Length: 141
Ligand SMILES: [Zn+2]
Image (cartoon, rainbow, N blue to C red; front, side):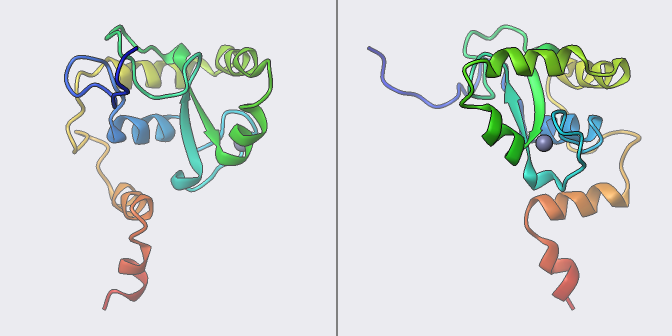
């Protein structure tokens, strides 16, 4: 029996918060299940086969292991006996361009905070949104 530990700090491949955000953006901030667009705090990235976004074995997480879902779809899916099969079929039907984008994100060792060419105001705004910092924009005079 092993002491319960948190996600490995060094060795394993763990999706950083930034990578998670990039993956959500690669999916157009859309739930891959119901296809609705949501603010990012509603969306979650789930790994298929495991429950957590971490890979203690240190092996590659690839695009086929991750799926972007809204909280509602995840809640409806997670307890189904065939949930893994459902998630896999979602991933199988993922459009090739999104597939390629996610692969690129996962291939990066550690993403720098500022994406080279994609930095824009919408990104800043989305970050504030993610951090529940909207009141800074709304009330911050
Ligand atoms: Zn959904």
